[in-house]
Length: 108
Image (cartoon, rainbow, N blue to C red):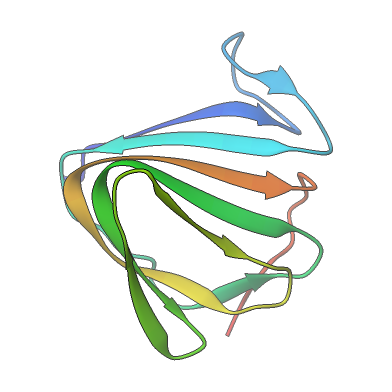
């Protein structure tokens, strides 16, 4: 069973008092001790997305090219750019920021 701890710190519908409500910014804190990957590439139609790696590393694929993002590094995906988290090397902690905070994910 995948042990992924994800906390919505900011977004349209934060689940508890930890997060604050915002239609303009979504922030997810992710902490995992197990490897995982996105099922397939996706893009966001209206929002830009950034990953900040705090610990561990992630391998992302952006329009067919792979990059490894390590601690204290970040990557950004402008709206419309197909991307995929190919592998998370645990233990990993990341912040994911997306603006605006809209449900706009489309799969390739």
